[in-house]
Length: 188
Image (cartoon, rainbow, N blue to C red; front, side, top):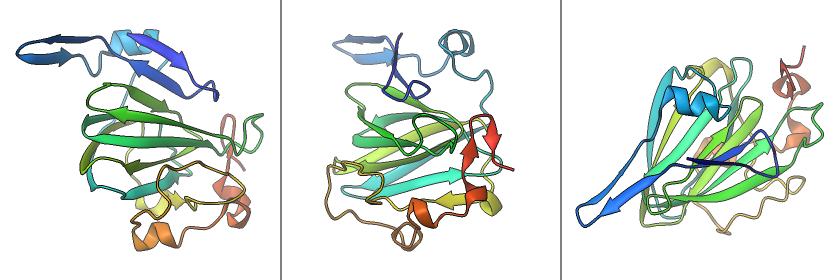
């Protein structure tokens, strides 16, 4: 497995070994020992699967308190996957990184706690699977506006399809300070 830090060093791009032949392919999507050696958490507590049609944008989502780290992969289709640093005391605060994840390239993106996450489906349909380091907590669920000009995310879709919640998400400057993170967790 090849592990590459992105320009946000805590966000990791993982490229598992894919064994292809005339029958199809095989790859290992998670191995506790190998992934811990690569710097990922030893424990994930919840697996999620999302199906989206072309141009559906989900995000930017995060939880605080009870933040979630996410190991994201795409078993079907293609997405543009984005992580945004929301750790107020981080040198990369407000910076983002985006990568294309697809069934074809078999890449994974590890989005650590303290980051918002979102993606847009670029194929007719896309399945997004992600392992989470904490359980979903509706009371702590937060959203950030996908097209916040202060972030300047370069989405490959100008007019995505959004849920009402995502369409009404606040910009970063509108977030209460207690919804942001410190490098070691939630701000007091």
